[in-house]
Length: 509
Image (cartoon, rainbow, N blue to C red; front, side):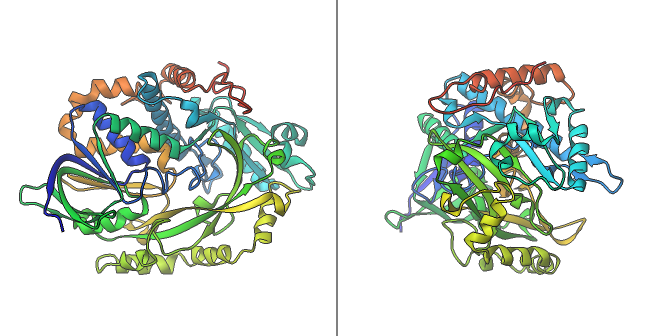
C-alpha cells in the first residue's frame, strides 16, 4: 500500500460526458484550477457515454412522445419538451464555442444533422399526434415541424418504413429537419484530449474505493491503481461523482445526508443493428414511436440512423433487459450492495409499486430473436432476420426516492444530488442525460460555487450567449443561436464522403 497523498482543487470521478463537460467548463472559467480525473476503465467514454451504449439522439424533445403528456382534459402538456429543448440548445452553444475557439476540432466526428420524426398508428394515436403538433408549433423552439397523415407523403419521408406496409388503420408522422445524431463517445474523447492539453491529470485504470471528510472539510479519496494494486490517497476541495451507474455506491460512501433514502434500479438495453448496407441506405432519420403500456420511458421504440466512425448505421430498439449490474463493466452484486438500512423501505416500496415494470422486464428478457424481429416489423414490415444483429447497450440506473407521489417512487430522468455545503455532487439517473450535460453541469457549478457566479457570468455568457435567458421568450436570440450553431458545427450544407445529410439544420424564416 502506498502512503502517497496528493491535493487538488477538484476531483472528477468517471471519464464520461458529464465529467468531461464539467472539467471543460471549469478550465474555461478558472484556467489555473487543478483538476484530477479517475476512471477505472482503460479509456474515456466507455460506459453510458459510449456511442454503442446509447441512441445518440440529440434529445431536443422533437420526436420523443413521452416528453409531451396528454392531460385528462385532452390538452397536451409541452412544458417538459420546452425545458429539454432549451437545455439542448445550451449544449449546442457550448459545443459551438469550443469548436470556434479550436479547442475541439472536426465537429462532423461527433454531430450530424438528421431529421427527427414521430410515427403513430391508430385513430386515437393519430389524434394525439395532431394535437401535439399543434401545441408544439405554436412555440418558436419547434418552428419548422411538419405533420402528415398522407401515406404518399410518408413514403417520401420514410420509404423503408412505408415499403410493403398495409395501411389498414390511420397512420401519421411529424418531421423536423433540425434534429441531430450525436456521437457522445467521440465528443467525450475529444473533450478529454482537450483537458489533457490543459494539464488536467487523467488517471485511467484507477478505481475510487472510498471517501471521507477531513478535519478541514475537504474530501479524502482512497484510490486503487488497478495496474499495480497500490492504494493512493487524494484530497480535494470539491468532488464530482460522475461514474454513471457507479455513482450511487460512491454517494452512499460519502455519508452526506442528501444521499440517504435513495436507491437505484438497473435496466439494461439491447439494440438491433442492421448489417445490410442496402437497407441502411433506405432510411435517413430518427423515428420514434409510442411506448407499450407498462414499458418504462427509456424503452420507447425507435428506428435510428446513426453516424459512427464516419459510417452510416441503422439501429432499432431498445429492448429492455435486466442485470443486477449498475455498470456494463460492473459487479453482479451491485444491486444488492446498494441496499442500505436507510433506503431499504424505499426500495421495498418501489418493488411493490413497480410490479408492472418487473413483469415487463421479465417478458423482455424472455424474447427470442424472432419475437424481437416481429417488433421491428412494426417499423419495417419486410425486415429480414439475417440483416439484423443484436448489440447489448449500456446499463441505466433509474433513481428510486421518496417524493410527494409517495415512498419508493421510480424517477425517469437525470438528477444531481449536492451536499448542502457544495463540496460534493453526484449525478444519478438516465435519459436525457448526455444531451443536457452542459445545462446539468452549469447547475452543479451554480450550486457548488455560488460565491463565484457573479464573477464568472461574463465568461459564461461568452460561452453560452443565452445564459440566464429563455430562448423561447427571445425569438431573435433563438434565430441567431440556431444560425450560429448550425454554421459552426457544420450542420448547414455539410458535404461528407458517401454520407447523405439532411436538407438543412435551419428552418426557413
